[in-house]
Length: 324
View (cartoon, one colour):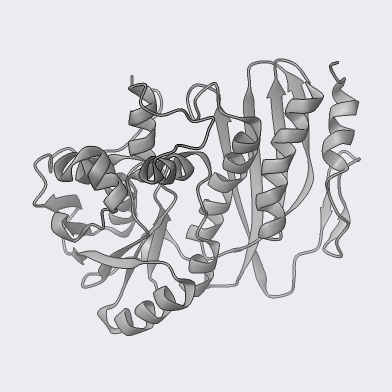
């Protein structure tokens, strides 16, 4: 059985909850929202297409999770508290079972972080998911890409490169993205690709500590390069300081693992800069959140980004659409 447009909307709307900050939600031409006093609105949008942003055979629950996660990661990079989102779905067919499974993944992440679905659109077409996520941040406290300063430390959260490793393994036929891997290391990599964890608590904790931040979606060097470009500085990364997980090392070896960490995307970790005086405070944040934070470089006068101790140091760019 296939649903029509309104049946599909009703299925999704049934999973939402009323909230005081939503004066009018799903069911009208637009939503009416109440922004708390003294807060600035933070808005981001991402589109995920089958075969480009996720393997075509990806389970619908994982698609629902990841589609929202990539948007929440952008809010995290701005130091924003997530609040609302819209969802636009293009589907070849409105299969009720697919919709329910997609919603399971989507709302599992949404409910965990207090973000409410307030509207969107549905249409027939190739599988594509577009989400606009909104949050708020106290006026003047947003983390931005253009605020890095000469002398800042460069930090990264977690262990970058694991999602890129999983993608490579899938491309080589060595990983089934639909089922849990028996090997613990492979399962860790698979989870990082299919269900990334947006670093929202870290983003909130970085307010007042970090100067500039970006999430690692296109690759660590590429996204750090965005910070350097917007801030008019040079970022110097020390290759030996980049944290490589044991799972990544065992899957690829040290050199290829470093390349995954530097140039692989889809990690959704946070890369940020902060004054050296904030080191102890950031170590306390890492301990409180049980999330590794690693100093990997420094901001200097100059332009661009480079990595010392990397055999491919001249190749700093990450993933770009429409380039191949």
